[in-house]
Image 1 (cartoon, one colour):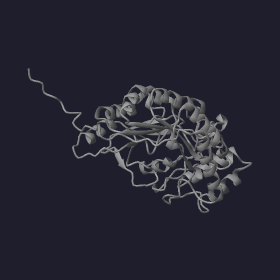
Image 2 (image 1 turned 90 degrees about the vertical axis):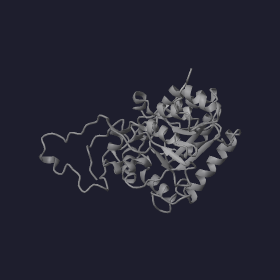
Image 3 (image 1 turned 30 degrees about the vertical axis):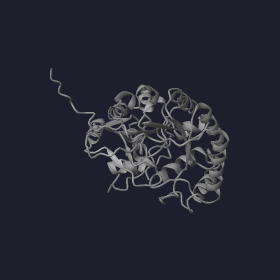
Length: 356
């Protein structure tokens, strides 16, 4: 692993670029003692445009609960240090570390590809999740509005869509979301991992504050948009004790459902997270690490279906019990949302020739 600098990169989750497992070589600062100046590393976010041939992903995992996902962006400037999506950055030739936060791949033609799929008479409507990988409302969306264009296509064809985000930018699209909600075509989950803003700034450095996210739930609910809270990921020893308060605040704001996962550190995320943990919580790093391991059969990574999200063992069971008790106590209106599939119209894009 390559250490970029001894200084802590404020505003970033990862603090270095671990080697890409698919790369045959990488550059390192091997002999810093002979350099007159430190190795220069750009801290600016780089936007990389791409034009894929397909945009909808078939979700094979039974843990997700969605048939399809759609990711307008790869890489995420939010910088959440625990993010499992970091590993997918390696397929693009970049590191899962700082590269994931500083090199954002934009799928410029996402809306066009989606409309092409919807206009196919063989397409069968099923809820599509925005996004299964990185946040569809990350900072660059404010300028590019690709997620908004995708929602417009969903509204045009009356196609169901599910959204998960931790950014208040979603409020910008409340006009489209309200129309979708009137037909039971949208459901939103707002990710809230705790209440301590100091921890958030370390854990999720470029995200909206927890307070603002709760306010988003209230605003969406006010406009009739069904909304829930995702208390994830839970990191034992860091934020597990905040579960009750998060659910209480979300329920008071109007959330009608809640979800949870326990952190798992697959691939390069293991090294990125451990480096972050030791630097930010040296007094409890070993205890937190051991508790995460105890939730995944002695390993911090976990790829086992039906187990990987919720974990196992005493620590995981206590977390899940706390979650269930909190949901029962504060979210008494908890109800299952059902998408409407019968409104879908693949002919919505047809041009009509009017003869007078």
